[in-house]
Amino acid sequence: MKKGVIREDRAEDPQEVRSVEDRIIKEERLIRDEEARSVFNKVFDRATLTAVYELARKKFFEEVEFIISTGKEGNVFRCHGGDNYYALKIFKVSTSEFRHMQNYIIGDERFKDVRKDKLEIIKLWTKKEFRNLEDFAKAKIRAPLPIASNRNCLLMEFIGKEGIPAPRAKDKPFEEPEKQYHILCEYMAKMVNARLIHADLSEYNILNNDEELVIIDVGQAVTTMHPNAKEFFERDVLNLSKYFAKQGVDTNYEKMYADIKAIGKKLAKGK
Ligand SMILES: Nc1ncnc2c1ncn2[C@@H]1O[C@H](COP(=O)(O)OP(=O)(O)OP(=O)(O)O)[C@@H](O)[C@H]1O
Ligand SMILES: [Mg+2]
Image 1: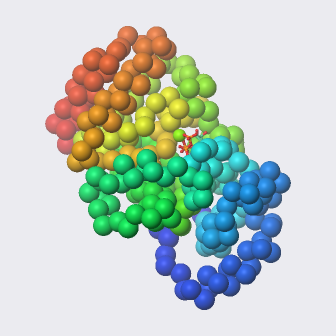
Image 2: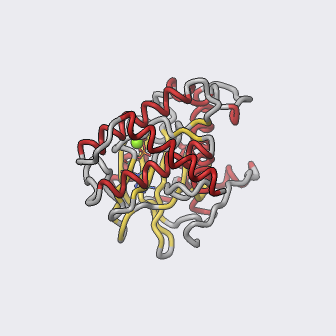
């Protein structure tokens, strides 16, 4: 599949899904790495495995290779298909601390008609991250391009070089922090102009892809209509102003706020 092509998941014929379920047990080859397979078997229910298999069957990728990251709410795996790598984020249904997710879904007008049981919330969260990645791409903010989503599985562009996942800005600070600070201010201004707030922005959710700044983990991003949007935005600015000040950039909360605002105005005028 070509990199950067955005495709949505489609509804499945139930009979087809059942036969997929039967086949999945035999599909050990799909997960080559032993550690990855063991995490899959321990953490994921059969319906999740089916969802992964469906994505593979639709030829989005050929193989789940290994775990990039294990987290409380989900795990991220590297997949490959042809010459391309992909990142597959799978949200845990059973152990997920989903309660806080509700705070980012309730109040977001894009998701107002929602049943609120746990599985529904997780599925919606996955869709929400997919949708947010689309919105980021439309606003020309560098984030992984979304490829497909199915149930609690989100397939996206792999961020890294030669198959090696990019480190977080927390672990590998940028060589030119001043330059990256301005790029980030521009992205944050674009977010505001596109009425989006990341709401969990910090050096933990920014990747340093060989000196290219990439924003990740956009599941909780909300629109500026959200009742807590202002508070979320201010927290993002505070986190990042502290981080860049530590990296030697002459900034602080007030200055970064003003920088974002000034860039936002300029961008809006240029439209
Ligand atoms: N598209 C991607 N390409 C490469 N690596 C990725 C990608 N998306 C996520 N990762 C890796 O997986 C980690 C976790 O991803 P993310 O932050 O989206 O998930 P999370 O569930 O919020 O996890 P955490 O609680 O650790 O923040 C990231 O820190 C990064 O190392
Ligand atoms: Mg994260």
